[in-house]
Length: 361
Image 1: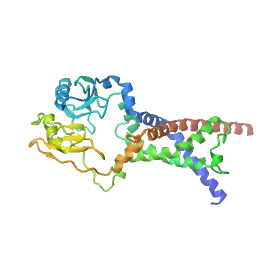
Image 2: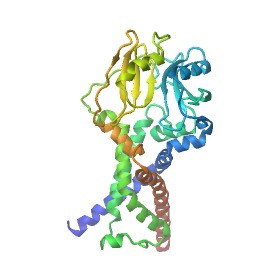
Image 3: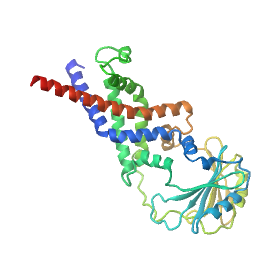
Image 4: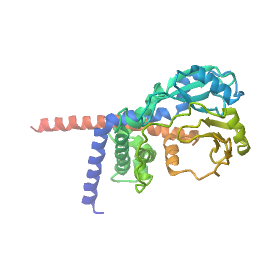
């Protein structure tokens, strides 16, 4: 590429990079910082809500004991949806459906945390309450109802473009990699910090941006040819009464599950069957138990991880190990730093150009 063309292209990338950073800084900062915090979701929840994790022992009671303790703590009309057992040291979590919610795309649930050793209720909250939940909503939709998820998706597109153009602009006009990694490429600490931090975070940020876009627009990446299904008039409701007890459903499913019990989901008006999940390599084994007959169906064999699930794990670090979690944590902190330092650079440049114009005048 001829030098004049390369300079013009560099100016174009610089203009795109600059105005993307300036225009979206106010959105990038909350999205990035909330995402960085959610990398440590479990630790954060335990720190903010220690009462939920004040357990006295391991799970040793039958599921019916947890169900009965939860029912005593629920208000009239609430029905148990599921019971989740801890994988290690932690509480039993009971999810219940609230009455009177019709037409809700994401209905609010009631969550109960129980001591696994004695079924004592440790805490109760709505599924839309709490600081950790607020971080999820902020990161996923900027707390904007309806179109918030799409806004976050388009911010992800802009961050992807910004990270790739920033990587192009980082490469020195004259010189190679070693010159690019030098600290004093610019005249201010802020500019040097922007260049060097931008280089190291460019590829992780591009990955986080791309996976975030995938999560925000599942219909596009999941297959545009799939016809859209109308939202149900109301969410599924657990049955008012069941013939089987959770203990009987577990006993029917046990021959098909050799691993530890993970969860029990109650039958609903749309699917009158119990779902008993057992831990196994390659994904949980879900055994269906018919509410009417009490017959269990063998679980499906383990399947390859879906692309959407892989994208979410890469994005939030679930099950990816501490090294990957640290990488995406830094990948969440540095974009906020780059947004602030980039605005400072822009303001200083404007001031410098104003001073030059004043002197010329």
